[in-house]
Length: 119
Image (cartoon, rainbow, N blue to C red; front, side, top):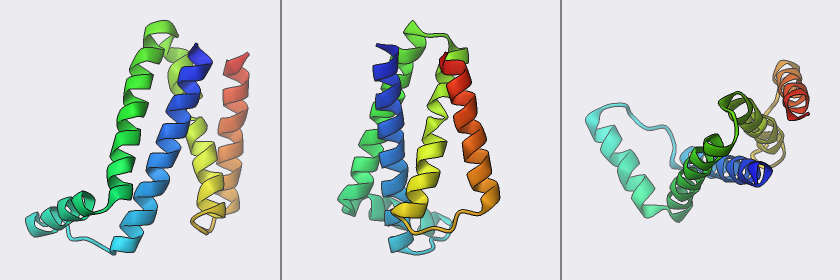
């Protein structure tokens, strides 16, 4: 059960982050002022991928709450870092972002840590 919950957490978080990044880049740079915040809220309310991203984050949150009920926190938090590895790969493949060798190396180190704690 813990691996199923972990899979849900990773999949939901990765999907949410990809959707957020794609849609907010499409929306352009926003101001941090009160008017800018209102524009961001309007953008979220009118773009279904951003609403889906919020739903995915909620799913991830509740799956994480369920995971920490049945598994130690010392497993749940590091294992959920698998999102970092997948997001790095998908940022390169899907969003066409540049991933420097330092980020790629860091993602590989995280993956190694996940493998170590998984056993």
